[in-house]
Length: 110
Image 1: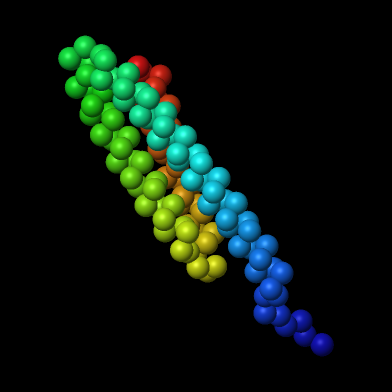
Image 2: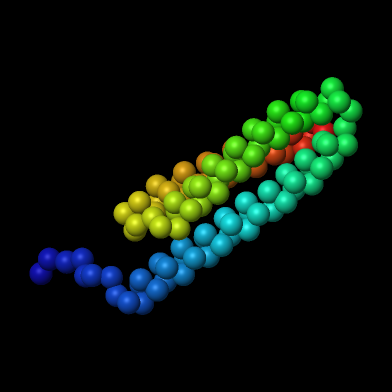
């Protein structure tokens, strides 16, 4: 007798939704932490001398842009369908990693 894929049970749907919720909350927490650290770094940059301040402002503009992209990707992932979930997770992690890397590099330069 051939094996037929059974429709998802209510239990598997709950587990999937729980995993998604946990992932989304984890990603939101990471982005919130990066944004808080970025704001602290921006305050430090504002105290810098005028010539260095211009460089800091340019870098902060880049970081704000990456933050905006990450927040937008998080919004997208919240409404992702089951069919697009895995792709969205991979994209979210790339955006988060790029934001985190840029932030850490900038922080090391300050």
